[in-house]
Amino acid sequence: MRTLCIALGLLALPMAVLAADERYQALPLAGASGGQGGGRAFILDTREGHVWIWSENEPVVAPDGSRRYGSGFIYQGRLRPGTRAGEWVEGTGASDGKP
Image 1 (tube, rainbow, N blue to C red):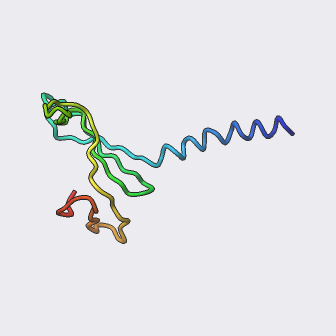
Image 2 (image 1 turned 180 degrees about the vertical axis):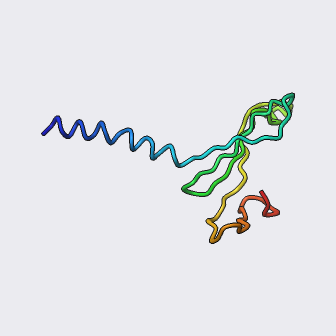
Image 3 (image 1 turned 135 degrees about the vertical axis):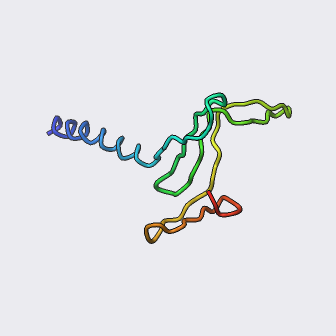
């Protein structure tokens, strides 16, 4: 009985890990030229609707006021579920409502 419980637990573990990985979805973004780094991704929290852009080469202001380029996340806001295909879904974080 003990061996059966351990075996079932070992089989369930990979499924739990896969389910946890599906919460965040990332898509590569095109558009940045190769000279600027170009590494960008759209990241969506499928459970809560939060959206970020990850950029490999983003202007960053250091605590001393100096500027440099570095990687980082830019929070875009939160989406609400749509009700039909083609509907404009407005984010709550952007001031103009456009992504």
